[in-house]
Length: 72
Image 1 (cartoon, rainbow, N blue to C red):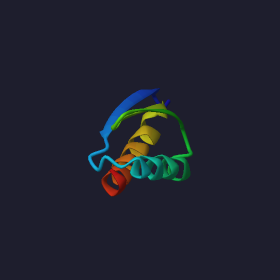
Image 2: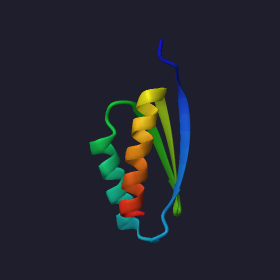
Image 3: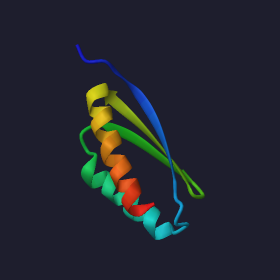
Image 4: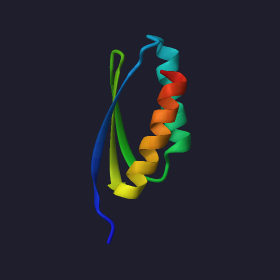
């Protein structure tokens, strides 16, 4: 049986560009559509909460880090 839970990841927009945050969020929608997640943005701080099995959370975390490196 797979363990299900939630995982919280924090990112920071070092570029300071709102356009980069928007691109980051749009790509999350495209590339991480296999589990439930919530995103909140306050200033340059981005909080992503993942809900689902741990193996899917791990896959999503890798993709999110790649996207963050690209856009933030």
